[in-house]
Amino acid sequence: MGRQIIDISMPLENDVVSDPPGFSPEIEYLKHADTAESVKSFFPGLETDQLPGGEGWAIERINLTTHNGTHLDAPYHFHSTMDKGKRAITIDEVPLDWGFNPGVKLDFSERADGYVVTADDVEAELKRIDHDLKPMEIVLVNTGAGRAYGTDHYVSTGCGMGREATLYLLERGVRVTGTDAWSWDAPFVHTKDKFEETGDESLIWEGHRAGMEIGYCHLEKLHNLESLPADGFQVSCFPVKIKAASAGWTRAVAIIEDQD
Image (cartoon, rainbow, N blue to C red; front, side):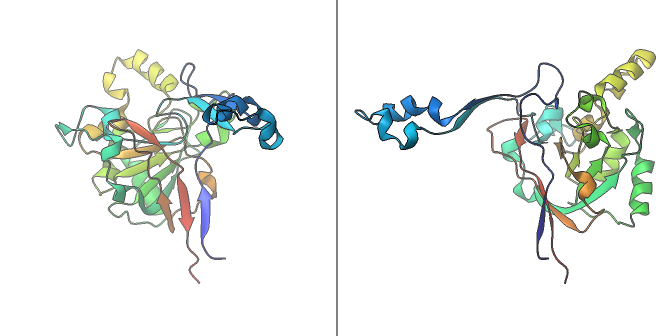
């Protein structure tokens, strides 16, 4: 069979809910007929009928945040500091060797929406899949949110990774994690209810904030994780290099090499 490359990214597109209201991408598609005048502006005297079919080029204008679509968050996104007080690195400073490593998939897709995964949960799942976690492995988490992609419920679907679960991974040398959900943490709509009940501010963004103790990156809005095995694959997730930014878009893929 040779090498198998599995796309684990979602597309950037209009009219599909993959972000909360007010945060969605906006893509304007300019077709060939729309841009003939633009082509002509580069070549004085050129007439439209001299272009093949009277067509210019296809081009898109996009209004995005760095957190639209499948992207890699830098430690700077989580807080201004990492590693207990050091300046948090931005996406252009993330080491490239973080972005291509063996992958591991943890499956928490049967957990209730809003459930916060614990360190014990992570340990039990690693035992279930019979995997010993190694430094620099990229840990992907199937939260169940992926099955809601394309519906209005995507941003509120899936479980999330808590502070202790995140630190469990980071203390073992993991530096890149990933989720099929909108956020590494549990959906805000569920955390909001818990905060209203308890007044405990430490519940807010607790998985992200673990980066204040140990700097790390995570992939958000992955897709197609159910097609991956528990291990035995590589993950490639190099981010777009945006100066001093909190995140960069990535075409994340999983690579399975034929063992024969």
